[in-house]
Length: 156
Image 1 (spheres, rainbow, N blue to C red):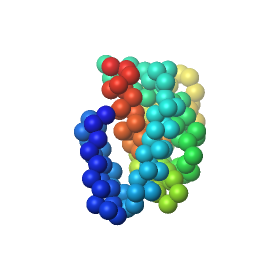
Image 2 (cartoon, rainbow, N blue to C red):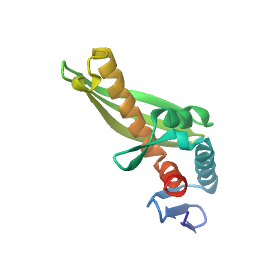
Image 3 (cartoon, one colour):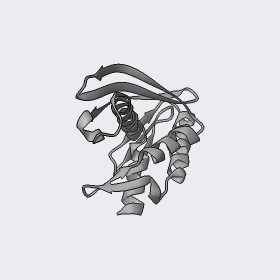
Image 4 (tube, rainbow, N blue to C red):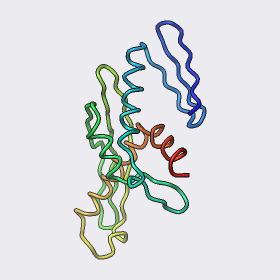
């Protein structure tokens, strides 16, 4: 990992050259909390938490939920909008993750079409799959640098 850290005294600016992530923190203690959380998230991952889909490594739902529930963080998942028809379900939600005074949020959307279910299940399963997809995308957004680092260094 190629990190460039700029310390201006009260603030830290970190840039990851591989993922392009920029982290601005108001204090060094906040910066270290975020770094330690990322390290713990990375240690939770294994090759079984990923699957190759159309030539791209994707994190599985179980691996992402493992990150969310096994770290010393608090989180909330709030549904913002839901559309449910006989053809598709669409869920929009916001995931907020907190570590002490540091909070990060991500909005995401998940869609499931009834035709994907192939006769198994009904509206409940369509709705549940759309919500799972929305939550998965939000976790990927908040922990993307950890996931990308794992894929680049252990799966390629």
